[in-house]
Length: 137
Image 1 (cartoon, rainbow, N blue to C red):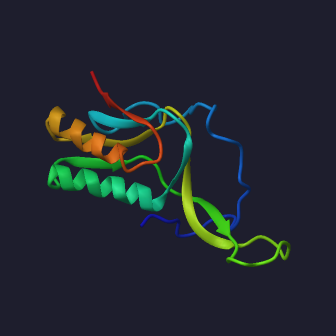
Image 2: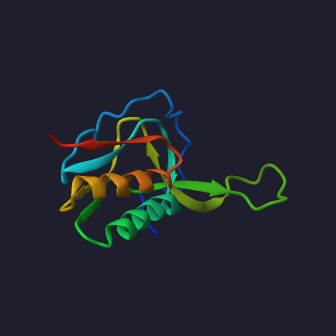
């Protein structure tokens, strides 16, 4: 699964809610002819990204080319169960990618539009947000 090799800060602040914000970067197709775009904001963890990637590769039978446009680099901490309050912040549990509405998540090329559209639709079901398929004109 995806996780950073090295980070500047081991533990991060939680940050603002991503529901109402809109993305300013990564809005358009940069590599492929068809892509999957987020229509709402949330944290997407590395397991969900991997599940979506596997759904795409399974449906396309590993034909064409896939670009993953997001990377989980935000550390999420968690304290063990049944531990009292206090004694600092917990250890790093997993990594997430904060996604705002409008962000391009996956891109594909080298396939028919029908096959690529269905593969991206299946990948969208693996993610905790609503998505839409974008095609380059």
